[in-house]
Length: 434
Ligand SMILES: [Zn+2]
Image (tube, rainbow, N blue to C red; front, side, top):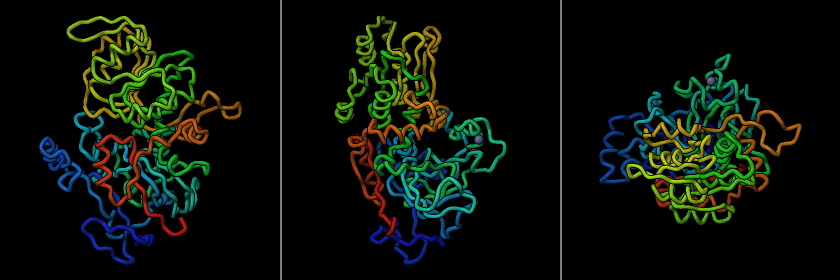
């Protein structure tokens, strides 16, 4: 049986009565149910909320009737404290990701949701060496199989170089249970990052997206005076702006967004400009800001000149097209958001201007940040760089967490996430002594 008592006042699962002393933990997963997924998508134009209803693929409930315990010596049980409603989890829950290569990887029977989470370790296997009971931890990304969780030796090249999110064995079904959406998760110790004591829970729950922002910026650290464009003022876009200000302070940063709450949140970041993200307008305004030349052909505006680096935080056909058109010769486009669909791209823009396009998936291994001391050189985890920026106040979290919702009201939180909040955070009941 599960070793965790039921916290006082904890909500019962939907449609279930609370049973004293029985397994009480719950989690949220996406069920592998292609027929139901197709039906829900067909109904969605008439009923937008169908994918989040019980007719969709998202399920919440007990992970199992009986707690099987930790699946191996290096596995860890974590009681969650806060979890974010990330764009990636939301897109999965809504069944928005279709027709991309990412969908070709075989889907597990249960894909657990909630990659932005801070919790406390409540149980460790006998071979765990990286964390202890009582430690505060975050997930380093979506929990999937890696060489470490599978016990493979030697590890594949991505795992050996500190990038387990790119593991060549991640299509193998994962051995853990639960993630951030739910009050408990069982994960491999290699999937956790120990939260420094100096960080609050609010800061810690943003560590994972902040680490992706760090990874995006360190793909090519802007040189002094370079002009960069961030398309999308969502959480990752705002974190990117703050990370750029911290790691490359003389960069001219322009943000493209149409959302008033994103414009308001970006106000304190000291950006060089904020322009509309609408197709066409972004190209004209972006070209004007960088003194680039523009040309019209077939109803499309093309640009000679533009930004040195562009970060696409929307992942749409339009945003990637604008990003490539607005990239300076020899510039770089960094795809940060998971594209919801396969996009069309004019490859001549990439070839003629020698533009590099790189993607950022999850936290990994990075070069040392530019202000690292001599004895801190070498490779860093993106999460360690992000934790440093949060601890120094260079990434401010006050305006990023816009709403807090009790975790048992998850479906309400998912509905709220459609109305344009920067980040909604689920709050879990605290256990006595946690
Ligand atoms: Zn691997």
